[in-house]
Length: 182
Picture 1 (tube, rainbow, N blue to C red):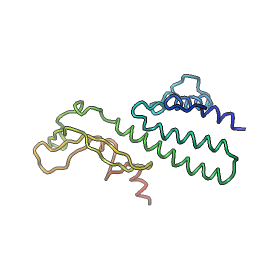
Picture 2 (picture 1 turned 180 degrees about the vertical axis):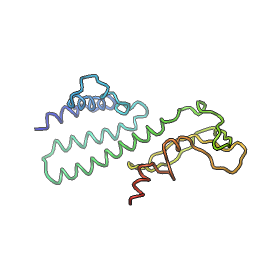
Picture 3 (picture 1 turned 90 degrees about the vertical axis):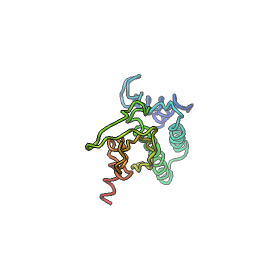
Picture 4 (picture 1 turned 90 degrees about the horizontal axis):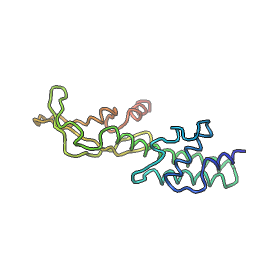
């Protein structure tokens, strides 16, 4: 029966950061990793700032607990999978947003003030600007630092992080690939 394993995976006192870490650690132990191994200490496992993943984790854990507490049926299984897909999609979206926004240095001053691209000099803008990016998990907000042509030649503003990520027309490469086949 799977319930003892399920109860070990989901601690009884879900209290935010530590409970998320406990969930991942329990899963790692079930997979054979020793206690304290790096697998349980992933960056997204313990959200520290603003706790944007905390409500998504709490909803996921509650969904699984509710399913485990109720009688099993085909309709309940169907509903669980549908809801779980949406909860996991939201966690993926939050994770992508965090990862994409950490590709570049957090402080604008840490970036070079002048760069050259295709023989044209560019000057860094004073603050990051947002861009909504389409991903397979939904839309995320990317904060990027732009560079304008120094001599105002009419060239478009460059956003190096968007180039690094392979963004095209506000979409990730995975979305672009999917659009090519649809």
